[in-house]
Image (cartoon, rainbow, N blue to C red; front, top):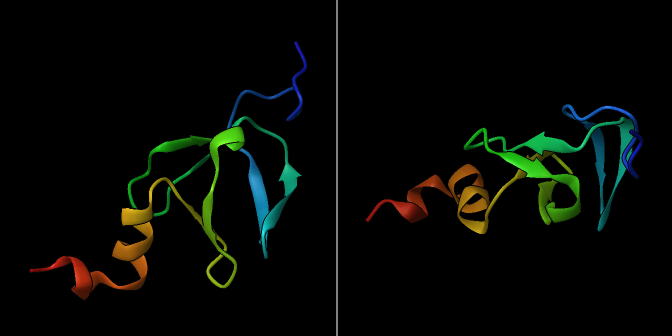
Length: 72
């Protein structure tokens, strides 16, 4: 069965842009660069254009970019 992300139910390959992303290889999810959690494409909200990676939660963004800020 086809869905809006293509025929594959696997991991998508994306190009992360400012405020958007481009699907390079179809799939239904990407993995968080910090936690390895699956992120469904329709729930993807956080990513880094510079590092070209996705994040599941705001805390994962902080952990990747400001690791010292989470150590108290």
